[in-house]
Image 1 (tube, rainbow, N blue to C red):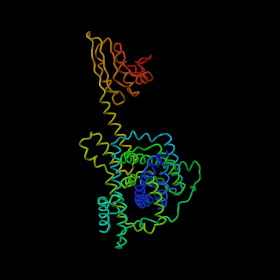
Image 2: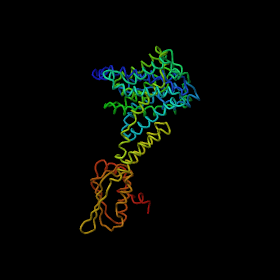
Image 3: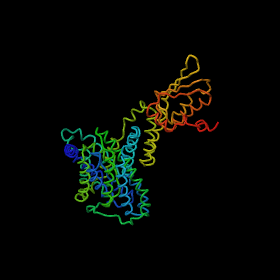
Image 4: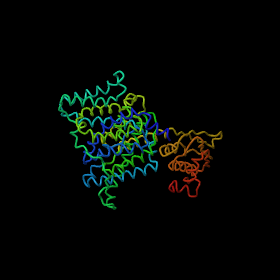
Length: 496
């Protein structure tokens, strides 16, 4: 236990502290922007980001991952806030947390193993595109100063690491933000700043129980929103955890992360914040800036609030162009360029799943829909591929009266029709042996196909023997098969 605490909290102190500061700076404009999207005061998003980041640092299952208020969650809140107000959003946030804790205890985080690598790649690429697109409003209808500052910021980010000695000591995104802020102040450049995004809070969040009646009517109002928030929040968090796992070559506890997200959202709801989840952009910033442990997440949350309360006058002067440069860096770093280079080598089905996931997520701005479509496509391609591996090879005895069908491969809903079509029912035989030694039956569709084959041969007067069933296949055939039961012919063939 002590070794784990030391490794997750004290194993990378300097890197975690510096990375956390960079993340905190990037969180401010996004939290304000997401609050505006949801239709609430900017402080609701800032309080949420502070609470969620601090809490998840202790209870989350993925060290080094950043959780806060997010755009995906904000989009789901718009109608609730517009029709019922902030108080209903707060109680919906509490219910979201409860649902996520339940999901954690039900081990729904394990479902991530059903998300294929092509879907994850599509998700990553779509998020990279969305992150870049989110910066476009800051780059349209602006003066040349904005483009110059953004270009300078990108130059600092990518070139500063090559500076001897100091280049490896300080995260280049932090150097970019500080340098451009000082330049804007020194030359008095008229440029959009963080202060233009909205009013920053001037006090710490306080305990706030939602002022709504706790009855069935309230539950009917908030339940659909809470379910949507819980699903999207967990989906984005699990996908982000998978990405950070890959970036850091470490593993995470997905079910603990589900519970942690729930606890964090309950904390946010009780302190006047909106629901949130893991953030791919900030998590990548954290990792790229050297953050690896829980201390980086805690630092991001604490420093966020410290900056808002103590350094608010300085924060308001940070040029949005500096943060745009950081987010463009995140977009470029997040996109899987290797997936484009390997498209010629990858199977067509893999490319279709990846591209479809990207297109759907970007088109709908809905992570759940895009990933759902990708998972469905991947499952269909997989079932079709495995179905083709099923083969039936017939042999016949010297007398020509007994034929043995050797079945090899997986028999299930996708290959069941091929299984039935592999038998010659018009051949006059005394006996048919179906050898299933090298086959496996997976579902009731496969069992039904076996029933149909056996009954058809018996109806034409042939003796049928089924041999070689493994234990698992025999269990499902004994339970659901009817070919050895009375009245099987009428049941299978419909009386014909």
